Amino acid sequence: MDALGILPQQLVFGLALGAIYGLIALGYTMVYGILLMINFAHGELFMIGAYVGWAVLVWLINAGFGGLHPVWVVPVMLLMAMSLSGLLGMTLERFAYRPLYTRGATRLGPLISAVGASIFLQNAVMLTMGARMKVYMTSVLFPRSWYVQVGSVRVSVLVLMMISVALLLMWLLNVLVQRTTLGRCMRAVAEDREVAAVMGVNVRRVIAVTFLLGSALGGAAGVLVGLYYTQIDFFMGYSAGLKAFTAAVLGGIGNLKGAMVGGLVLGVIESLAVTFLNPAYRDVVAFVVLILVLVFRPTGLLGETVPQTNKV
Amino acid sequence: MKVMPATRRQVGLAAACAVAALVLPLLAPNDYVVGVAARISLYATLALGLNVVVGFAGLLDIGYVAFFGIGSYLYAFVASPHFGIHLPFLMALPLVVLGTALFGILIGAPTLRLGGDYLAIVTLGFGEITYLLLLNLDRPINITNGPSGIIEIDPPALFGHVMSGNTAYYYLFLVVLALALAACHRLQHSRIGWAWQAIREDELAARVMGINTTVAKLQAFAIGASFAGFAGALLASWQRSVFPENFLFTESINVLAMVIIGGMGSLAGVVLGAIVIVALPEVFRDLQAYRLLVFGLMLMVLMIFRPQGLLVPRSVSTAAKE
Image 1 (cartoon, rainbow over the protein chains, first blue to last red):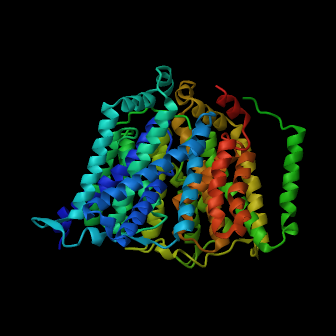
Image 2 (tube, one colour):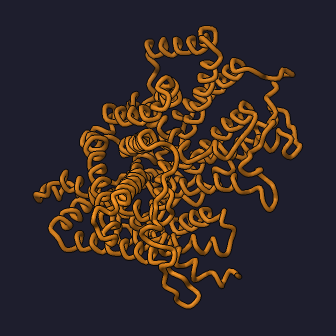
Image 3 (cartoon, each protein chain N blue to C red):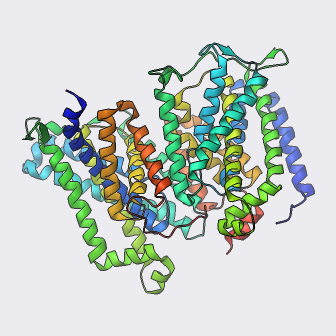
């Protein structure tokens, strides 16, 4: 089939992938918005979410779903992965990052600490789970025969589920940030940490909750990616994290809507690159677009919502 | 900041370190240790180049290893059977350094308007693109030979003597490191060094004071890249082969960690950082599979207890008190 013929199909894949990028990007952008810090270990929390989901799936399949209707399997996987990734993210913040920013380290100190955390988590997973990839038995939940045909485009139920879960989680986060007291506190801390503290906001708690939420979304993305690609390994957080961070910057870092838009744009760009160019250059195209956007519109597509700082 | 004359204690310490470095191969229990020491010297030179960009000029570059890769491949192009060109070592070196510096300007130019972390992301993008091009430019025209890399690279020949063995390379790298240290020291206390410091502290103020920030930043990129090009050529000639995998993003982060762990902007700190980052995983080699786990943990612990780095240069420590 010619390139134009497979384009709609590729666009669907691009949107699905983009939704996942967006979900992971939210974790980067939330933390950056508040601490101006690139949490390099975020990709690893995504990876650990994928492993938790895998473990739950294996356990449930072996237990004959434990009397659970199969419809509930994915929610249980998501819930477990989000809880564990979220708690782990909060633990990281408490022990690896907080001691640094409360002691007035340069902004690069936490970055290196996060790199250390990333190496640590990768190897911890490799040592406990083995270096070989794990296989998600997705076909038990989503048989290949489940798809919706729209013209020439075939959309599997799995992809529909992925996109809906990602959009649902993004919507929930948006409601939380825009409509609740906690969300108002988060925005206040992002705006100006010191003023927020003076106004009675418990800054430390807000930062901890930010890590909890961002990491939980990363964990959920891990489960979705596991179900979609069916193979996971301890190194999967590296490239996914890099892409998601690119998406966050593309949309305008610190900007929640920007992360979602950046994710979708990146996913679609990649699907176009795969369709019209050599698939080997998929990532090259993604990074070239990122550089062009930043050079001509340095605050991302939707603009940043954090104060610009030039200090390293 | 005035140029501080080195105290007697500092001179003594530097001399002791130099003597220790010179006699190390004699005391090393085996060739493997000499190889590790050679790698430390090479990476210290590389990290000094990044220190010019990040530590001196305050431009966060997290794709620095791209220049290391470009230098390695440029050397491989002009000194291997790949293109059938075999330039002598001392002729290839300046060409490689010049070529890499040009790439530094090329990549630096579009980023000049960007501040802080946006610059970091663009450099990350360039780093990834460089890696992917090294990996994929074997088709349609074979330039980099793709994932199989370039092999059978010529070893350096100095004055008719072909180098071999880790000890010879160790001394070569040590000489290069000494030259790099001297160059950095001169740069730091020169006009351009002061301009970089001014840009690092406050770019707008620097511009008001009449510093051409565009030129100064490009100079930082070009000089940083030329250090990396030099180190890259040395790596290629030492390994006698280059592969795209040598220049992954993780390597950039490793080099950045060297600069930060030692204490940004401090030359001795950068060398100390290179020792820590290269030697720590070797020290933990007995732990086998657990070695990287412990390395990651050590990075976190180090940053928690020494958030400013191991050696803090005077200007940074006063600035941090604000």
